[in-house]
Image 1 (cartoon, rainbow, N blue to C red):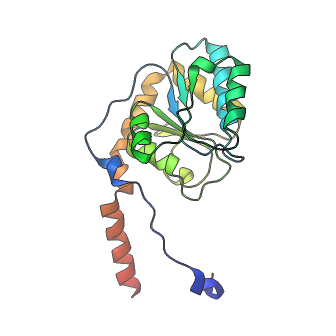
Image 2 (cartoon, helix red, strand yellow):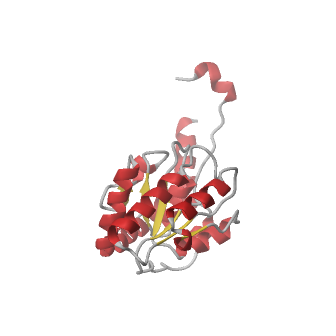
Length: 209
């Protein structure tokens, strides 16, 4: 398809840091929706959609347990902080700032849902990282999401704020689903194990040569 551009094309393997595969399975918290979305605060990441949906969920269900963690930095951070103030959920949303990969991993382990609200992703580290750690994943249909998420099996794909609110409401009243979906993801985590991926690349390259 891209013969005219072949001289510009490089093969760039993508996967998950090996540190995400260390240790044993870390059980999911069992106190409501403990959600995390690490991302830059910029247009297209849409943290405001998650925040508004979360506030609406709290209003509809009187959920006193759930929390949202939004690591990262960027131009829209102060705007998002102002939004949670206006919506009255300042005590339910945390902004830990820009973190190293290991600190993000530890936050994932304190969560039971990895959530993504981006307009687009090339691959989507914030989709696969919670996946390999055995967390439920809720994502817009971007990056690798459509390839690995099966609705109701290991997470959910959503397409609107209203849809996301309904997912929050359902999972809050069926919390056993969160744990089951997380376990299902953990069983499939080797999809993103570098040892396996590198072997597949090696076989393909040898075949093509």
